[in-house]
Amino acid sequence: MKNTVTTFQEMKNRNEKISMLTAYDYSTAKLEDEAGINAILVGDSLGNVMLGYEDTIPVTVEDMIHHGAAVARGAKNALVVVDMPFMSYQASVYDAVVNAGRIMKETHCGAVKLEGGLEVCPQIEAITNASIPVMAHLGLTPQSINAFGGFKVQGKTEAAAKKLIEEAKAVEKAGAFAVTLECVPAKLAKLVSESIHIPTIGIGAGAGCDGQVLVYVDMLSMFSDFRPKFVRSFAEVGTVMRQAFADYDTAVKDGSFPAAEHTYKIDDSIIEKLY
Image 1 (tube, rainbow, N blue to C red):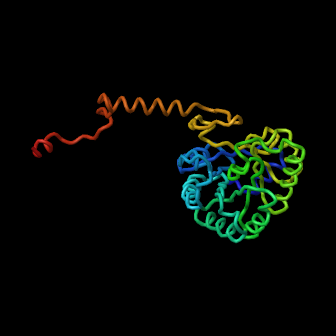
Image 2: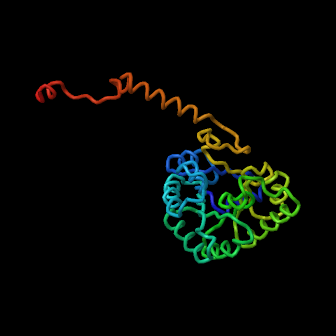
Image 3: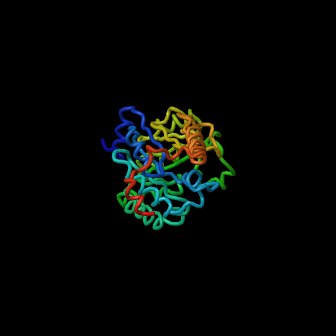
């Protein structure tokens, strides 16, 4: 069954958990889709895990469209959400709508996601008024990493916690169909989830959220540059891949690959005529 923004709301209403993973290419998206994942996020985390940047700041709209379109081609049932990268929506409401429109038109995704609270509510409202579903993102917002002074848990003080609840209500009022909560204390994230009607998707925000999202290369132990506390490894795929690559290297160099069963035949009489 095709997952939509309506599916998200229905699942929250029924107290059913929503599963979400990132993907950045056709083959991975297809596997996740076949596994029954409800939503696939084409995150600007591709800057770190696919393009090798130190953070998400250099990622462009073109990057997101390139990867987003590939994912959308692989996902038949999952709701595909594409991140709006840094400075694609912050400068003006006009820029936000134009860039969200480009992403939707050129990727065929089902929604876009942008970071921020009260300051981006005008953008959320304008984008949703253009019939483009928007997922909000509160707590630790990686595009603001320089302003935060690093990757830090958000909402730990009374003032910060009250602000987070206020911003969650604000993005809901602006028209967001869901909100990602990143690196938020579990009890606060649960309270936020109970304070708004739209679904919350947690990443490092505890089990009280309406759903969970992880970067797929993290949960498969494929990315070792940085490992957040909230990541659980569901398979040591990185170890398997590394060994497979090493075995291939050995087989090529010792001549055991390709073997006869990996080659195509030709009649010896034809070969003899070529000498």
